[in-house]
Amino acid sequence: MKHVFAVILFVCLSGCACIAKSAENIYTGLISDAHAHLASRIEGVAPSDIIELYRRADVFRAALFVNVKKLRELRPLFPEKFIFFTDPYKGKRSNYRLARERLRKIPEMLDSGMISGVGEFYASLSSAPFNRMGIEIDLTEPTQEKFLSTLNEKIAVLHIHDEKISESTQKIFGKYPGIKFILSHCGYQQPARLRGLLRKHSNLFADLSLISNNHFGPFKFSPLISIRPSTDWKQLLIEFSTRFLVGSDIGANWNRMQLLPEIIYDFRRLLGNLPIQTAEQIAYKNFDRLFLTE
Image (cartoon, rainbow, N blue to C red; front, side, top):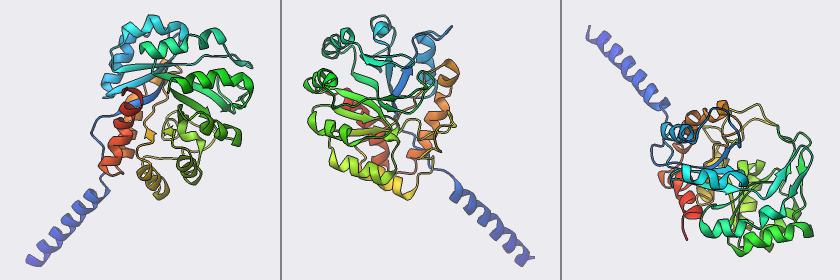
């Protein structure tokens, strides 16, 4: 009888051990969303709905990309935990161009704190619902000099969507060291190339939006980072813990926005795979350092 009891006890303990081993580590600290869109028109959705959504998702702070025409109207409706970005480019089906009257407003908006940077700016985009033809901009062209010089002078942050990060774009990183470039969606890069870019350019950062979740797919490829990052990704995130940010990329429509709690929970699962110091840097400390410090 004792032998039977011992066997049963061993099986029970083994089962408990397996459960404990398979349990996930969840990051439970502060988390800030560095990449989210606020569509110009979302029928029936008020700022209070978005504020409540972020409360439910337990997000500490958030950066919202807003149409420049809506900034003065929306800024007073959101608490200070929300910061704003805007883009002086006009996006049409096949015509993505710099609007100089918008660019003239950027310095004042940065100085007043109405915006905390510029974005999301499209340098290389293969396709999107708002532009199926894609976008390709050579940032070394003279027409871009005023745009980039303005941001460089203001030591501004630029969220840049660049799927290729061409040699000409990399020249811009060096030419305008005052700009803090944030590669949207991890720059669509594999860990080895992203490591090389981050080592070469100290003013380069990356957000983990889109690539790190599968809620908006399918896209051009499977997510590069999952909730269980590979060894290569873990090593990269640890090595450059001060250069990555969380990003949800919500905002195209209300259905997509309501996925925010699920997306943020996935980030908490991803960050739970990292040392706590690394997780905290990526979750909110880099956000504060880039956007909130003088």
